[in-house]
Length: 267
Image (cartoon, rainbow, N blue to C red):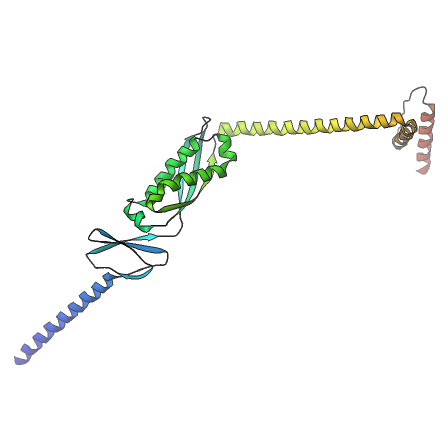
């Protein structure tokens, strides 16, 4: 009986120590926090802002302090495809990608409820506004300028949230099928026009050169005669040669006959 009375207090004290040790370990586990190099922890004590901690190890008071992790890396999100009417009344579907990062974690938590969702919704409305002020030709040709306008239009209102928009890229522009066919016809007509212009320029250049050659031949009749003989010699190499000349060009006909005879004898 005496032994039992001695053991009971010992067991009770042991259990108390064990419970106290568990509470201490739990308290330490709840108080010790770690954030990575690219993260920051925004701490609140009883609702009052204390500031941002990290990277590395920091301590909080359980049940008194709360904190929010903020990622400082460059983040991206897709802007859902938007149906937009351009300045020249063309309906297009446009989607984009936004690149941004948090440069002030305190502002990102305190000044806006959900900075990710807010930036996403703002990007959608900004995309509709900027594209709505541009023409279809600008959307197809000046896409880089539109990307810069979108980036600036997003960066200004998100600055009070501690967010820096680094880039906005328009991914795809979907045109109506009827407009695609019309643009294809326009491109085909443009290619036809260019080909006709090139042919006309070639004919003009050839006529210009021939006119210059005619003037040279007019100044030097012997050169014209030699060129005539050379042409006849080339033509005489063909089979079934029939050469029609004027009545005053007997020498030319005789020369052609000789050239033909020499060609046959060579074979």
